[in-house]
Amino acid sequence: MRRRREKDNSGFNVWRSYSDMMAGVLLLFVLIMCVSLFQAQVNYEASIKERDEKLYLQDEYTKKIMSQEDQMADQQNQLASQDELLASQDELLAAQKAQLDALAEQLATQQSQLDEQSATLASQQSALDEKTTQLADQQAQIDKIIGVKADVIEALKQEFANNNISVEIDETTGSLVMDSSVLFDYDETELTEEGQEVLGNVLPIYCSVLMQEEYFPYLAEIIIDGYTDSSGGYEYNLELSQRRSLAVAEYLLGISQSFLDADDQDALKEKLTVNGHSSSNLVLNENGEEDADASRRVEVKFRLKDEEMIEELQAILNS
Image (cartoon, rainbow, N blue to C red):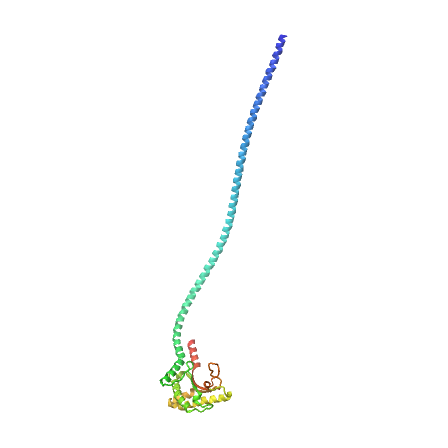
């Protein structure tokens, strides 16, 4: 019994030892599993951390790459813009070069024309200098011709002054005006004694100057004009003025032998003309009204050879 009990206890001990062993194995397995899990957890966390770090780095690299790509895109855009600008500048430079070439060609043409014009101008200047010399000589001739009338008027004034005779010689026309009331009685055509005396004093001096050798070649006419006032009819006054101017001319011719030789007397007859103007050229006073006494007058004047002078001037200018 005891032996059996010992035998039974011995079997129990075996199973307990086996159980303890299995429990130890299980514990060891659990321990290994725990260590493995812990190690796995650590490895996992390390892997997660490493992954996060890699993702972070990848994200940073991505951002950097994107930034660089953006910069490259901007640079490419800038390069494209610069290419367009360079192309535009090339076109502009080409256009400017073409324009400069055209301008250079035009300048060369203009320079050639300028050279030709300079040569022409030099030739014209030479011709102008020659013409200027000719014109200076011609101007002297023209001044001489134009100055003849002024010289005649001055000579008349001087000659009357030398003879102490006070008369008024028109500065422009050289005419000598005599009051009809001194020469004629009212409404008469016969010279009075006083009129003959006046004419005898002034006409020889006036005509002698005109017949002088230096003036006679330019003399066209010695003119005696008669004028009346407005009283009476035009025809009557016309006849009256004509007869009065004729009376003065006849008196002049009658006394011409006293101061002219025979040839000059004949020349005087050829130059002398007589006109009657009736009341066509009245003298007005300062109020614009007719001055009847001044309107009744006889004028002695001269005319130079205007047409001949003009032809001579024209010939000088044309030459």
